[in-house]
Length: 397
Ligand SMILES: Cc1cc2nc3c(=O)[nH]c(=O)nc-3n(C[C@H](O)[C@H](O)[C@H](O)COP(=O)(O)OP(=O)(O)OC[C@H]3O[C@@H](n4cnc5c(N)ncnc54)[C@H](O)[C@@H]3O)c2cc1C
Image 1: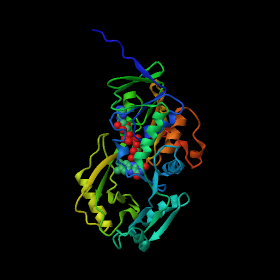
Image 2: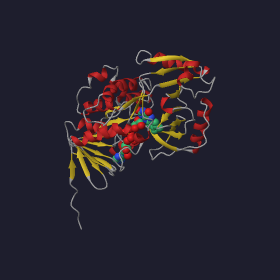
Image 3: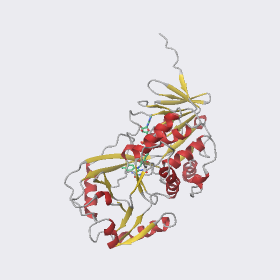
Image 4: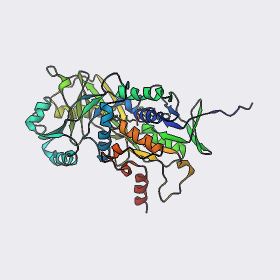
C-alpha cells in the first residue's frame, strides 16, 4: 500500500517553543504575517517560563541585559489595550547585600550600574531596617534598587498568547518538532501529525535550542542549561512578608523574596544539565537551607513547595538573537538560510521579553532594530550569533 505524501501547512514563519520568548516574538510577528507557533507540551509555560522568580530588576545581569530590561519597562507599565486585566508590575525593591569580605564585589557592581538605575548604598543598620530578617552582623553594606518590581508572569505570557491569536496566529500544543529539513527555499518542520512549511523559522526552544539547531543541521551556539532551585517556606510570625524586599547576595549565592504570604528562597544554583523537565536535587535543597539560615534569622522546619528550572546561557550570559551565520572559517551552508535564533535568555528572559520580542521581530523581517532599544545602549553585536562564531574563530589554531 502506498500512502500519499503528507500535505504541508504553510506559513510565513514557524516559531518553535511557546514559552515567553516564542509567545512574545510570535505575537509581534503575527501583526503583519501568518505565524504558526509550535509547542511540545500541552501547557506553553510548562518549562522555564512557569518556574521563574518573576523579578524585574534593572540592576541585574550583564550590560546588554540591563539595556533590554530598561527598554522593556515601557511595555510593562503601558501594555497594549486589553493585554492584561491588571497591572503587569507591582513594586518590589531589590536589596543587594555584601559581607565584609565582599566589598570589592559590591563596589564593582555599584560602579557598573550607578549611572543607569536609581540605587542607594546602605550601611549595616540601614540594611536591617529594610530587611529585618537579616542576622545581626552578617552583612556590612549593600544597595537598594528602587526601580525593581515583581512581574505577573502568567498575565504577561498569556497576554502575548491572546494577542497572537487575536491577530490570526495559530498555536499548536502537544506538537514536538521532530525533524527539520530544507525543500527548495522552505523549511519543512515535521511533528508527529503534521508537516509545517515556512521560509523562516524562529528557534525559541529554551533549553532545547541547540537540539533544534542540530535537527536543522545548523551549527549549535554552545548553550548550557543550568538548573536553579526554588523553595517555598513559612515566614516567621510577626513579620509581614509582603513588605520585604527581594534580598540577594552580591555574588548571587542565594536570594529570598516574599511569595504569596510565604518566602521563596533559592541557593542560586547553576548546575549544568541536559535539557529536561528539571527537578530539585536534595543536595541543592540542603545547600539552600544552610545558606539562607546563615544569612537570615529563620527557622526552616518544613519545605512547603519546591521546584527547579533551567536557565540557559552561552558563556557571556547575553542572549543570542539573529539569523544563523556561518563562521568565517566555514562556508555558508544552505541550512543556515532562514534559521533565526532567539535563545540564551538565561535568568533574565521574563524581564527582557518585551524588548527582545520587538527587536527579534524586526530582525526576522530584515528591518532595522527599533531605535528606542538601541537608545538604551544596546550594541547589536553583543547579542548577535556572529559574536560566538567570531570567538570560536579566534580560539581555533
Ligand atoms: C528559578 C528561576 C528563576 C528565574 N527568575 C527570573 C526572574 O526573576 N526574572 C527573569 O526575567 N527571568 C527569570 N528566570 C529566567 C526565565 O524564566 C527564562 O529566561 C525564560 O523563562 C526563558 O523563556 P524561554 O521561552 O526561552 O524558555 P521556555 O519557557 O523553557 O520555553 C521554551 C519552550 O520550547 C518548547 N520546546 C522545546 N523543544 C521543542 C520542540 N522540539 N518542539 C516544540 N517545542 C519545543 C518547550 O516545551 C518550552 O515550552 C528564572 C528562571 C528560573 C529557573
